[in-house]
Image (cartoon, rainbow, N blue to C red; front, side, top):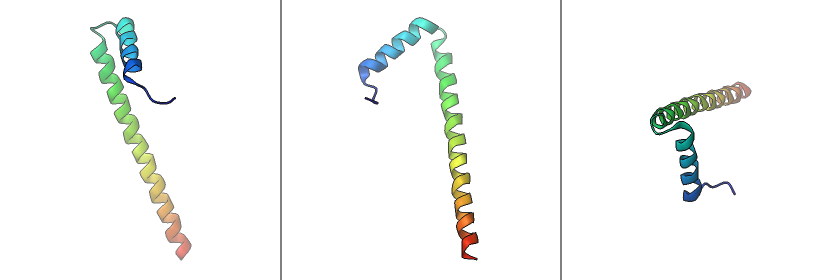
Length: 63
């Protein structure tokens, strides 16, 4: 459990096609791609900030 195979992916795409229709599907895909890109950018930013804070704390312990 946890992996999506080809059959599951085809089923999800078929359901999305039925729900949104063929004309809205490209818009939905674009919006989803942009949302995932923004999420990834913000997650990387948080990770970078946490790493910087950890390094800063380590430097302060040496003093």
